[in-house]
Length: 134
Picture (cartoon, one colour):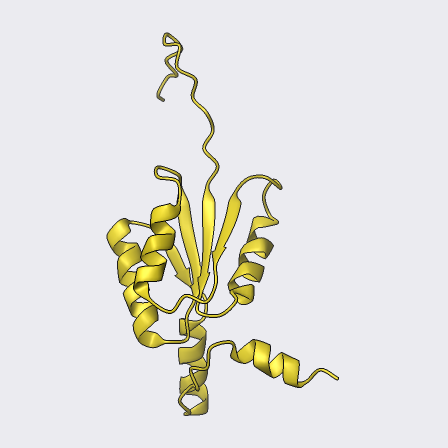
């Protein structure tokens, strides 16, 4: 077991991890999943930051660049566009950032199950829910 060296005057601060929620829509689906998972931990165990309406890998790269360097992070994302999803995943792998694609695998399974191609409509859940209100 490693021992803690207290011979220096350096103060080691706890670095709070951050979870990034990235979506090509508002990101409410991914945010809800992250908040549900985070509820299993202390209230202030991590920070959550969201990038909504992402339409390019460049936007995602800029968002990642703005995050505190050296801070532990993970990304939860929802992209309906397969190319964008793939390109973002490659960028996250390149940076060594763990990530979870919350929408892609579910859409693939449902497509296989129904034999239909997905609409790939950004914000489809929001649109469907708003059309059923009232």
